[in-house]
Image (cartoon, rainbow, N blue to C red):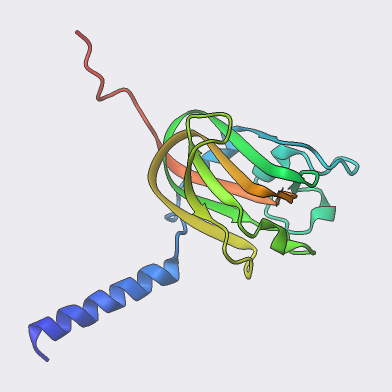
Length: 178
């Protein structure tokens, strides 16, 4: 086998391994969403369930009725958001979807990252499949304080059983003082 063929095969293998890993955070990465403050457009109140903070409680239970998922009412431009309180360079977002029913409700949801609290931020990714409960997205270092899950331009409910966010705090080390 010549060198060029070997390099092509090695590159193909590397690409296949990267796709298998998907957009999962690196082992040992810290979920920064847990320190944030969650909110959502509305609350479908059912006993003590449905509140926005349920999606950042660290529990990946996918049955809504076990009390660890957020849930909005059905409405146009429904959203869920976490304020990370500081600017981060976001590398990964992992959504855990509901599995006891209704997983298709998250189809077309957009993950948005930026510094605007009104959810008018750049899109990191869009939910195009709900075949798995865990929906990972690579955000490639997008900068922002707010991470939102928005279902734009349609009547919808947002139900999230967990939102994990991974990235690095943006520091002032590059600022120059005169």
